[in-house]
Length: 106
Image 1 (cartoon, one colour):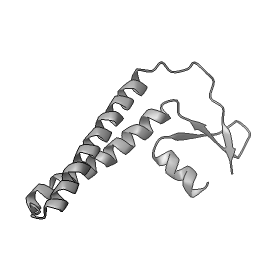
Image 2: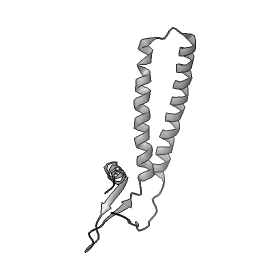
Image 3: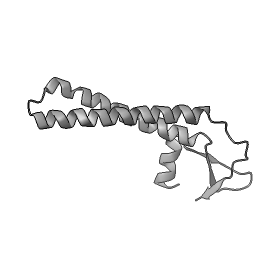
Image 4: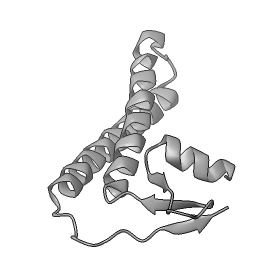
């Protein structure tokens, strides 16, 4: 099993399956993978926002530094809002009623 496949499996983006009488590993992509990816990235962005909140304690005196922090925080808050909206939309989206196709990976 490749490192990438193990990583995707740990993130619950793919599932390893076995077929009767076959010793190979197969993987199925989860139907909710897009929403999970957005949720993971949203969590990372939230951590970055929390780190930027700590900048208030530093109270930079340089006006250029302050302006850049304010601009980045505004950008970042907009990005978080868009990602949250995307996650809501993905979770409200009806799931296709298809049979998953397994991909072989040795």
